[in-house]
Length: 393
Image (cartoon, rainbow, N blue to C red; front, side, top):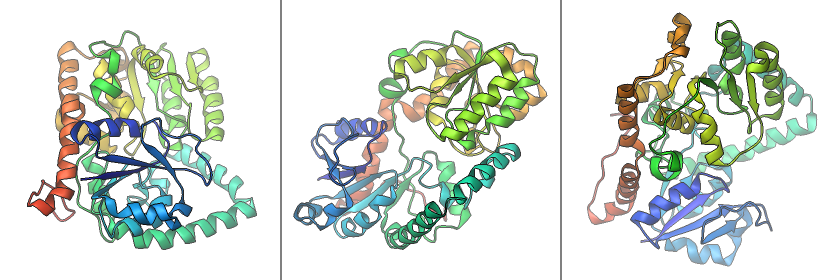
């Protein structure tokens, strides 16, 4: 059996590769999307081949495409649409979603994910972009071309693994996709090897407040900053803004400094993961004002370290983790009782949260999901059928 992984250059894929190699050693091949003639930014994983769309017409593609039993899409990058049309003739296709690549099949626009002040800011930024006619034409042509390939390639996908099952349910309920592939559970990263790593067994040791995870409008920073500025709380507020929209980052940085003064701790530079987790340890509390599934890696790490976390009740991550038994609070809880920002979790509550996380993100749990995913697709030929979920169940 041979498994082909289609990916971009990113920090998440090596987590997946390790699990697939543990369960299916020596059976994994990697194609990394790159620009024509470029090999920069390649994932540092042995055996990766930089691939671009012109390679579809090359001899190596026609020769090797028949060798694979299963193709794993690590996020549905639009560049893969024409590739899928070719590959689907010979192999099963599994789509492992990241969130951003399938949220357009849940909502058709950003309005549903943004609070009022943040949405006004987003609209203002869009007007500036629309004023550039050349960019507007490029965007239109891009949408037309992508729509053509998307309509042909999406029906060819044999399974989808959303970040959490609740996202899959939202896709089914939205009705934007005419056909939604069966759901198979799978997640990036293990507690032991990727998410917590050398910090296993350690706990938060500070009172700072973590706010959001990126410079993306969906963090709804403005409303959260307004709320925190009205509370009688002296703790520093840490805002990670190292990636995302640069204009939004600058606005949030200025707004946070204006409203929170010297309590605002703005992070705009990328730092090593161990240094980042050390910073998270100083935050006994985390506020994630997203309306959609986002920042799950940060949430998992903070829960493991013992932080008290506040999520919006409409965020499907809240539904998912509370259903599993995790101890979380809502933003509404905090509005009713701001004193929760001075009340850490008890030891028993922290232990319960860790047990919930281990059910989903331990190395054994992730490897079992990898095994089931591959067996579902390739094992069908041998009479094996793994448990799966359809929209109509």
